[in-house]
Length: 142
Image (tube, rainbow, N blue to C red; front, side, top):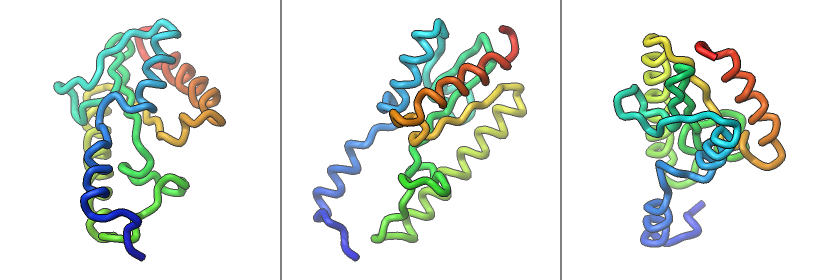
């Protein structure tokens, strides 16, 4: 199967994908702020530059896109039909980097919370946000 877009259109579309301030990330940030949590963003001093850092709770939150981080069993993680090997290699490297960052943060005593993009859809947001509050309530220094 070939790509539905020509090379220039596909290149343009891919260049528009952001790494920071994504819709799922903004959703979590607004929710946390509304509940009184204060945080830092993308702290370069921490492994993996976590999306949200809650220093008071020694907790970091990663918000992963299902496609980019290879969310197994998720309907949003579909391996592309073109350049399949290249994509699998890229996503595999993302997963390896994620695992390395999580291990390094855990080793330093940080609690790591991982939220997948699919968990922030309107049908699952309430459940995810309640779980997030529960996870944060069990963090240290509350």
